[in-house]
Length: 251
Image (cartoon, rainbow, N blue to C red; front, top):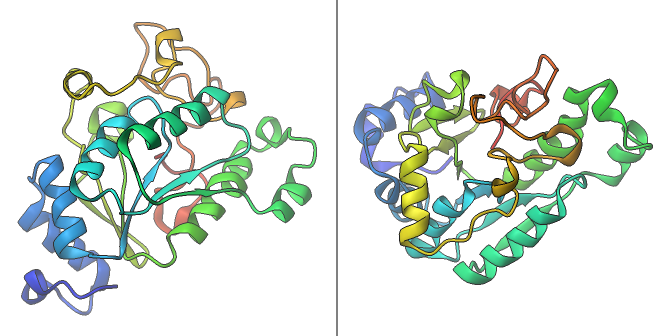
């Protein structure tokens, strides 16, 4: 964990990362998206922060903001091996357009897939375990050398995210959520103003996009993320829970 001189006096050493997070929220919790990205990249965690992106339906906005602040900041992309072809194509298009310099594609460990999901059907019998080997474990490896990482989550996405704060504690790291207060209309307006391409599946009824087997179309009157794990008692993938538990939240 990098020292944060700006808030050192506000941090209780006994509480560690959670006290640090509380101090960050008290001082910077109402920052706008660009200001939060600049703060994380240039002042709080220089050289020790990454952005984790699904290159999904709303990813372009945060990626664009990062590209304007510092396009050399690492961007971590989890390729689960079950993504839509459109998502992979969209990733390539955005990387080229935004001239991102350090996009790191992280995949599941071959041995985990071979032992737990040899027939690619684990999503039907144990979706939490499927998310764990295809998302949680790879992300653990990908962020181990960073002190903080940016996420693209927003409060409007579902009830579990309605109380998100700008900074969160995650084991020994801090997560930064620059877009927490943005609305769907604000995202669309920003994308239009900056000529950012839309994920090709959005126009086909997919406002939230994950792996092919666990993503379905969403009706106009449904929750934004209701097409994820439809019919299951599961709404999140697991990478935002303490210690990366398998029933937590998505990117």
